[in-house]
Each structure stands twice: as structure tokens, then as C-alpha cells.
Image 1 (tube, rainbow, N blue to C red):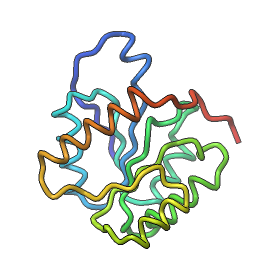
Image 2: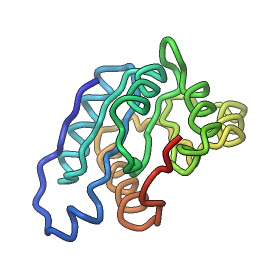
Image 3: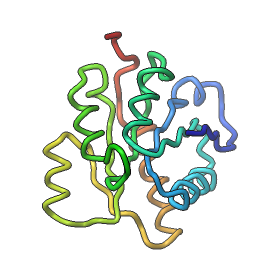
Image 4: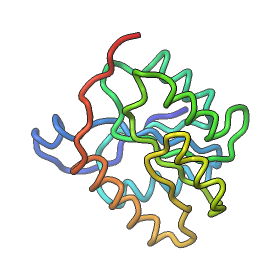
Length: 159
């Protein structure tokens, strides 16, 4: 796990209103790097937390996440130890975490897999873009909707 904050200029209102952490769970170092650069190119200053699998997500939630919920979770499906479906099921089964938007981010466009993810509670299913420019645009869209437009609860209730 590592933390990265994209560089960007913002007002105090921006920082207080929109500075929720964005969790990215993906075991592929190249995908993590490309996402990090795409967030930076969009001058998104929200803290990014990169985790490698569902086990690291569970550890992060249990030990490092304070009472402020993340803006959203962007999560790959195929990961070691605990895959994306298992992690999604864990998130959505916990009443404290259920309200966190979880977006599945996968190379698979298999209709059965997409349907299963939505049935498990995914808020979106995105096929990883094959072109970098499309990734930069995707990050912009995700940020605009999930951080600037969608209203989310302010804090998690304690267990």
C-alpha cells in the first residue's frame, strides 16, 4: 500500500468539500501507475490510496480509515488472496461500508460477470480502457460524478 496525492490548485471550499480519499484496489503495478498519472493529469488533488487486493483493503478499513468515508472505491476483479467479487461482497455486507460507492474496473466484459457484480452491490462496472487518453477521460468523468456531483454520507458510524 502507498499513498499518493495528485498535485492541484484548489480553494479552501474545494479542500473541505471534495478532499475525500479515493481508494484504488488493483494488483497490477502498471495499471496503478497509469491511474496515478491519469489522476495527476486531471489535476485531482484528492488523496489516492493504492491497495493490491481485498485483504489489504480489509486491513486499511480496519486500521487506517478514520470516520470519513472515501469518495469511491475503484477495484479490479482479478487479484490474488481476495478477489474483487469477494471484497465487494465483504464491503456490501458491512452496514458501515455499504454506502461507499464501489466501481469495478476490469479487463473483462463478460455479461455474466458484469451481472454478478451488480447483484453483489457494485455501483458501476467499467471495462479498463485500452488507450491512455480514454483513461484520462474516464478519470475525469469518475471524479466529476462521484466527487463533485453525487451526495454521499459524511461519516461512517462506528462498529
